[in-house]
Length: 240
Length: 100
Image 1 (tube, helix red, strand yellow):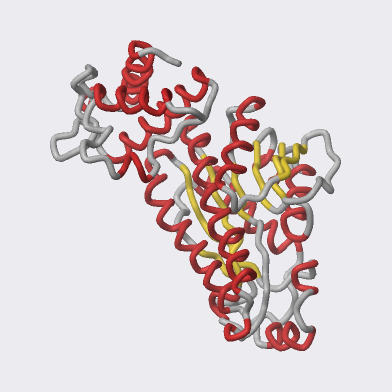
Image 2 (cartoon, chains in turn yellow, cyan):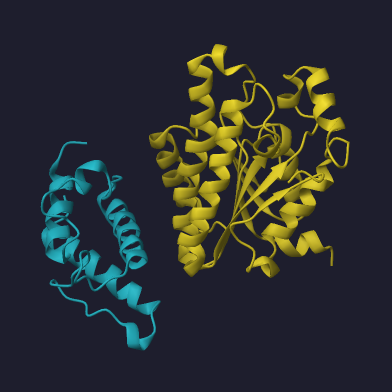
């Protein structure tokens, strides 16, 4: 049997930021491997699949998240895996970073992940099994100029996972962070090419991440066999 | 609005559900006087959290509206609504009596 099929078959997976970029790649991969995907995003669905259900919301809004979960619970009381992927990025020197852009990063990247994890873990608790995977960033380790707030939110995201890992361990829910390196997405396209090239050249494995590099770690963290892996941050490409 | 007996029944059932997840030697004595919070509480912290989540869910389902038992107001009450089943019942009734 295809190992990924064994991991995701009939599993219900919630992915935030599922419309594009890494979130969409992961959603399509899990759908391809027999999982059922619930997508949370600000915009309309970009995935058309019988096992995909889309909710349009701002995850940084507590009331929107609560309303969405109330709606979600009408159709399912099961949730096996949560992938907190949604993120926004404004790269700018802190001295001229617009406060509204900084606030938007905190709202989506950190508060949104907290609000969704909070509700998702209540559903997982009932089944006494779950996987929460936060999509972090190499920016936490590399600390590139311009990414002060973005890196701070992603560092916070990893800490969120680590503390929730302790709180949720008694109900067999693991919480981990996958800190990805640069992958060719819309988000990356916003950054200057010379900045990206310089960051990539400095990596121990100096290349862009490929989708399968990400799927490999998502598989590992989602697997039933990974029940003893929690509160960990996994970096890619040799970043540490 | 849910009456007092219904609210109490939901809380007591949620406590019994917690017992289903606990070993025989760790069973909680379920009654209106069960201490939910404080130094002499019958529940550990994770059990209290689980109880709150279950009660919120059940009340929301039965009353048809979302209630939050852990907002700033609950945390700032002089007499904690989590002292015992009776106090929690009264607090829930207060929340349910307010306009949405």
